[in-house]
Length: 191
Image 1: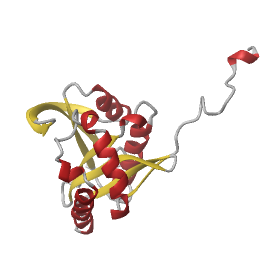
Image 2 (image 1 turned 45 degrees about the horizontal axis):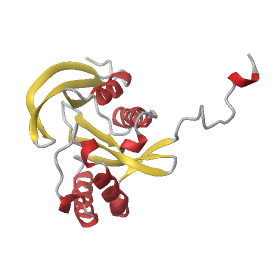
Image 3 (image 1 turned 90 degrees about the horizontal axis):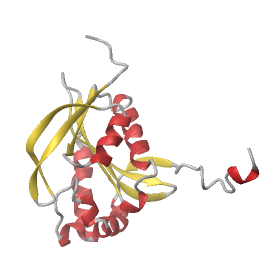
């Protein structure tokens, strides 16, 4: 191999360091900036958001609401951090205990962070938490038909499609068809 074939910088081969942490009100300003800057980008998988909702105060109110759900054990609201920078959100929503032990996974990553493996790494971390300390048996996710990037992330993480839900979610201002996916805890073999 000649010298020209080797990378000259570790930045060429380096993957971002990705982590998840529980959202806090201190995240409101950065999330407001990300939500505002990514409004169009997020419409493929999120509802239309009002100016009030994407404002710093709107984000603070939304964070307080999801923190109350966290305290009640019904939600795990997290931020995605890549190389020390908040670049998105991830939540385990609608956590159900009892015989179901399930939650719905939702996430988004800022457009500037796409294509670098950040969403995949974040979803893998969420899976580890869901099937580990959170104690779930099943995760589900829904992806708007046509959102190939999100579908690829979930498939790389082991999710399998089990159906199509017509007009399932109101995303980007209209009712959208969604592919339904699930992942079962592979270590839970009890029948």
